[in-house]
Length: 342
Ligand code: P6P
Image 1 (cartoon, protein in one colour):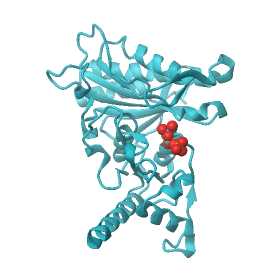
Image 2 (cartoon, helix red, strand yellow; image 1 turned 45 degrees about the vertical axis):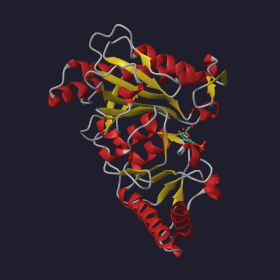
Image 3 (cartoon, protein in one colour; image 1 turned 30 degrees about the horizontal axis):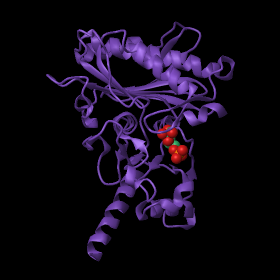
Image 4 (cartoon, rainbow, N blue to C red; image 1 turned 120 degrees about the vertical axis):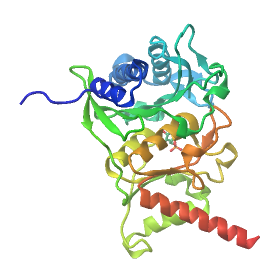
């Protein structure tokens, strides 16, 4: 049987022709996939490369950095600087913008979480890299945070690499979602999951249940009803999954449906939530919507949240359309009750 698979490079050239874009867009995505291949290699070497454990430093979030956090961040910065297509970058691991020197035609901005879920590395659970691409607004200084503070609807591309039982790259350029699996022998990403779609219905929810005591009423009601199973108001049993790596949880939802919740709660309300808007929530929301799902804060579409700070946090509820709509309805009911009670 002749080899008939499409590689990610072929797909990007086809997209370039479809979009009528210059080679720059294709080249900048190629730089990202090269970085992800290199990170996959470092993650897979794990203990053999002395890559496990703590780096002995903290990131801007005040979180202890793992050695692989630093390695992955360095790889993303280096591999995406060489091509000259980005004017600047923003990373979960860096407080400030990283301006790319000497880029004559850097017309794009790259935002990324170089190794999401890194608390799982030492116990060999899937982790991933998340990226989002914006255009540099005309006449705006790329070294200014303002250049990056664009709502998620302005993303030109977004995706993630998941370093799991296989390494996959899942990508949208606004024309649906496609998944590519790394052929380790050849070093190429091959199209294995064309046109990924999230089923509108699901019986699987994903939330850190240890935070139950902090939950607000709409989330508590939704989860309680799922837990009540077929004898409860939903009339059917639900399953719960929580990996603790957003990339792994979202990948499962893109593959078989589900609803992921990291809501605002009594403990994280002062910080605005847990997950970061610019390089976690927005790229995942773009992917989820492009695959037929919904992504909301509970009260508004994530992609329309106006950013005010580079490392801003937001509540995240995303996944199967019908379930997310139900959670949103519960938030609206709750708001209605509060208004009526005033
Ligand atoms: P918790 C990983 O640190 C992360 O940012 C996401 O990948 C993940 O969904 C979440 O935090 C896990 O948070 O509170 O369960 O440790």
